[in-house]
Length: 142
Figure (spheres, helix red, strand yellow):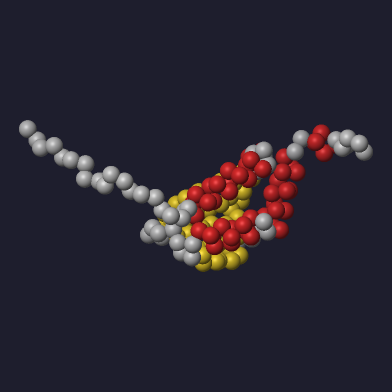
């Protein structure tokens, strides 16, 4: 008869006091879909890179078969400090910012998501996916 091997893991692994860059990006991806009625959505692709993790944020318009990376966050096993890398309209690297914690990460991310280049891209994608009749409607009272 073989001996029973007990569960040697701790009863609780706990939780991190700060949200991970990946969870912040996934939440923003979800919220973008809500704000655009899923015409434009965010997608987050996470991959390991040696001893680090890279989370790439894409803007996607499924009706147009369009997908473009706009930024990525990279960190080690510990979430912070993290690197936030931003891409230009052509997908080339534009800038890197090192962030020490979740608050600074969200502050930097807010600035990039509200930048003219990202807002213009989202607006263009939404406009291209609209029903043509939506553009012809005259507001009531006009």
